[in-house]
Image 1 (cartoon, one colour):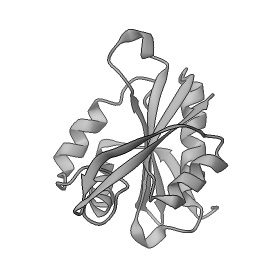
Image 2 (cartoon, one colour; image 1 turned 90 degrees about the horizontal axis):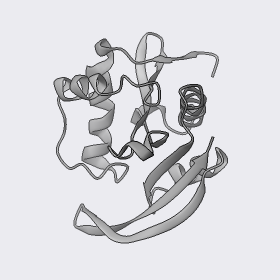
Image 3 (cartoon, helix red, strand yellow; image 1 turned 120 degrees about the vertical axis):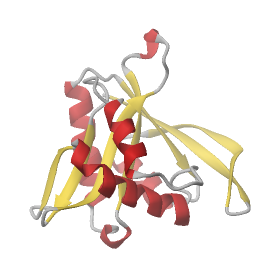
Length: 165
């Protein structure tokens, strides 16, 4: 991955991040959102990720954002301050090259440095690539939520995974 720069996201990345996310919204079950978001939506979301436990990283190739990953608040209840939920999205043209693994590994290190203890991931069970990547990074299955999502005319199961840092 020497041709890829992984760095903290900035507000100027919001449009590229929204475009990558919208690929997943419109064509996959990587997210259960069904409506595309605007760059302004993503910019507002970035503004909510200011705590050290909630880093957002982007992967950049040749000056272009090609993926992003984040740790987000799991719960507003203060006892959960060191527990977060992980997300990662890669541009469709960049998948299958190890970018998601590299970006997620860097994100976990940033979370550890920010005081995160437990990282959760919710992954649709049909998303076998993301499940394999998560297991490779040391996540373990904690359960399956049956038929909790509906997208593309199907009901979908979600696997809950966890990694302790």
